Image (cartoon, rainbow, N blue to C red):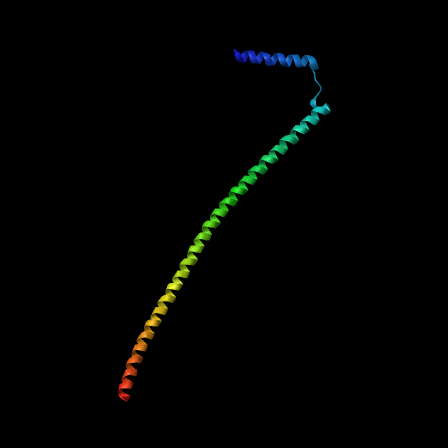
Length: 124
């Protein structure tokens, strides 16, 4: 029932407009105001599409940049950890070498001390 009523209202509205402007209106292209209006609407739609595309592109760039930063941060942390591990390994190796050198010097000094004691006993 409502659809029928709406259709009838639309038909009556169309009929009333045609009675005002006549049954054979001029083509739209001959009316400069219609051409101007169509141009204005198309320009407005074009601008709104450009704005929408620009916003989408900015959002995509921002998302890509944030992803890049997160990835770069993770890579930096991994690199830092690898450098720290390598430095710690190098320090441990130097520490072991230094301990071995000290141990070798201790043994050498002990041998020299024994030899020195023997030399002093022989002299006395």
